[in-house]
Length: 352
Figure 1 (cartoon, rainbow, N blue to C red):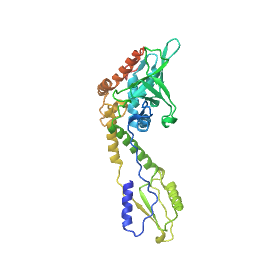
Figure 2: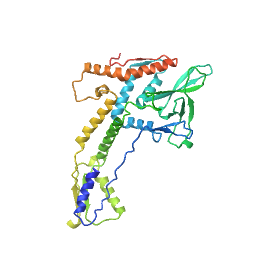
Figure 3: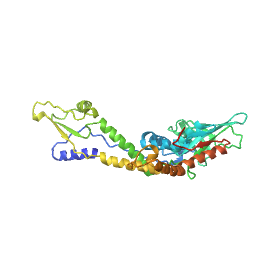
Figure 4: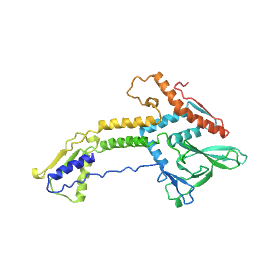
């Protein structure tokens, strides 16, 4: 839109001796690229940062909150992983661990021993945990955005069930060759697909809020006013005529004569609706592919209207075998190693 506005103004400038004064063009916005870079935070080379600004898990959470398709798939994976029922002493804890695992690719809990040697396990927000390179010492802070010298944190050892340590952390991640995990959708192309869906949604939202923006050009032929007056005129027009509630309203201009009138020109802009619709479908497909999933498994119908129960069952069996069961088995084995027996009743559409 901005490029086309600029092209229009360039043509207009070539036809006029004086420079056009136009106050309603906003500058381009740049999206900062987030990368899961790992580097040492402190001078002792102990704490590893997660991301260039140590905020990569916050970025992943923002994608989960802002990208509808990603949120739907992750919520579906959580539901499928917890099955129809979690049997054992920690169903609520496992719910939270499943959520973190599908968002970040990892999760964390704290083991606390009482005086008689009994151990209980509590959830820790995975976003707030950092690790050293070897993965035997962990650091917890409510706010990692501060500089290292100002950041307050707690230090925990890795939990060892055979020791007498009063507390320790159990840190779960889906990779072994790096300090921090990579979520299922962590590939660069999938992250970009999430960003595309988010930005297209924002584009349509702002198009509704700014009805005339980029669509019409108002030429006032009464001289060039001061900047303050320009802002007042622009504000009055935006408040009165822009927005979805003012579509197709008539704009009236009262002028003394033609030499002091107002020219309203419609900017010929390309219809991006169809192109964006195609692009968002490709982005959504990229997200589903990352999870090896079919949209129908998450209540999102495809163009194939013939998707029946048999096809659903066949699709779910494959998805369950390749994505869900391995995660369930990993957590069941993890708790068994910690001396806790848990089991998961497999997901089924048939509930009593």
